[in-house]
Image 1 (cartoon, rainbow, N blue to C red):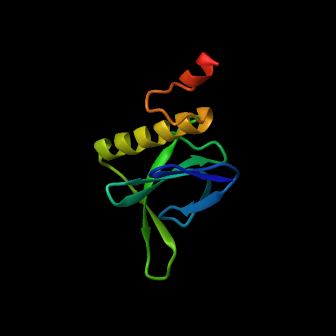
Image 2: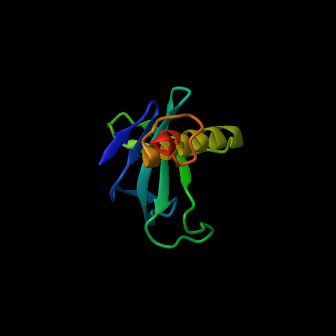
Image 3: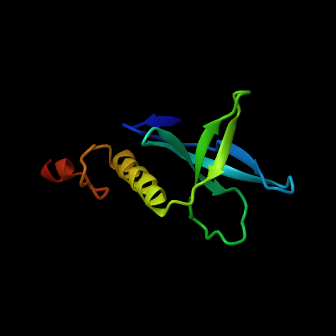
Length: 116
């Protein structure tokens, strides 16, 4: 199931993306979200299997470019400001997704529920 927020699409389920390194070695990732930020799209991925240098629960962020043949190309992002901004957008959407209240300052506990 996919849920669409203002500029974040959270992907619930097991959507798998296979990326290849320079030596053509394949690594599979779960695609957990796509974030639109400043006109570009970013995929948030988690490795399916343990990956050296990546802690469990870590999210890797790649800029997605569409190639001429229609396939997506995942590009490394080196700008820390962009990485942080994309991750913050994702975290806001996750908080809204978990709570469902849609408020900007929700920490996963809906303020409206406390009043009922």
